[in-house]
Image (cartoon, rainbow, N blue to C red; front, side):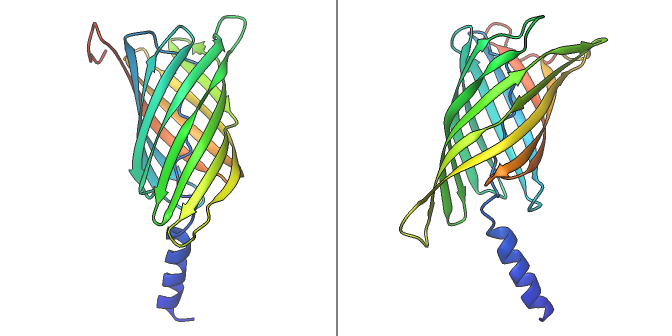
Length: 212
C-alpha cells in the first residue's frame, strides 16, 4: 500500500473516532456557598486517539448541599457544553468522606456526529492535609445514556457509557483562591480514556476576583 493511502486511512480512523469527546468530571464533594463561585479550566489529553480538548466549568451554590454547574469546551471535539445539578447530602467531616453526585445533560458535536448524553456522576471525596498542603482526592463511576445522531444516518443510536474517574485537587499555602486539579478517566464501556490537568479559581460577590 502506498504511503499516501496509509496516511489517508490513518487520518480517517483517527479523525472519525467517536470517542473524541470530553467526559471529564473535574469535581469533588465541595459545594459552593451562596454568592461564592468556582471556575475550573482544564486541558484534556485523550489517551486512545491522541486528541486534545480544552474546557471551562463554573460552579455556584444553591443551598448548603446543592449547587449547579455549567460547562463549555472545544478542541479535537468540535464543541461540547452542558449543565449539571449537584447534591451532596453527606458532607466531608473528620469521620467520613463527602458522598453525593452530579446529574445533568451533556451535548457533544464532533464532525457529523452529535451526542446528547443524560449523565450521572456519583462522587466520593475526602480532604487530606499533609503539613500545609491540602489534597482532596475524589472518585466517580459516571454512567451515561447516550443518544447519537449522524448526518449520514436517519436513525439515532442509543447506548450506555461507563467510566472510572480518579482525581485530586491540590491547595498549596501560597494561594488560597487558586488551586490545581488533575484527573484520569478509564474507559469501562464506550467512553474515552483521558488525562486531565487544570486550575481552579474561587471568588465571591463581596470580595470580587482577588488572587491570594
